Length: 246
Image: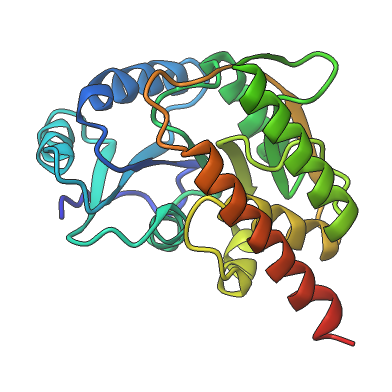
């Protein structure tokens, strides 16, 4: 693991979850640094590498030597995106915690509004949304239909008021997130939904931000398999929140 000693009062910790991302890693890190430098010099970037087998870990080590703001958290075995995020956030130093997908599907000009929703406007959680009137999302019909159906089910079965639970572009106030993370059971894609549903039910202030979003070229989402799996996770969370408590 590459480590860098950082100020405990850093403003922002930005996590990039990474699994077999060697081809996208360098441009993603460089563009993220450029975006952050436009409005803050108090940040760290954490690559949460999750058992990659394509050289992502080695490339991350090289980048960490080049950029002092960057550090790597490496796992030898893949444990899931949600687990990687939990682990990275617990080891972070920032007061505002952010993560975004490494393919930069969400335009980076929305990074400042996402962070300032927490640091300036006082929200506890903030998330990019591809479903708002001012959003601009480019994706296939099948992915769009699947996403709309999924979010409809989450809202009506789990009581959330958010339009988009799965956009990989989220910000959190440190204390509320760390207080909630151990309640979250999801270890992979469903992590986003569960954290936002639990935050809504706990009464935290959440802001949705319309974003410009373009589907990544090499998405790791298996539409049929992952959609079915996440449907069953909706059922599982509904059971946990509704039935068991009764």
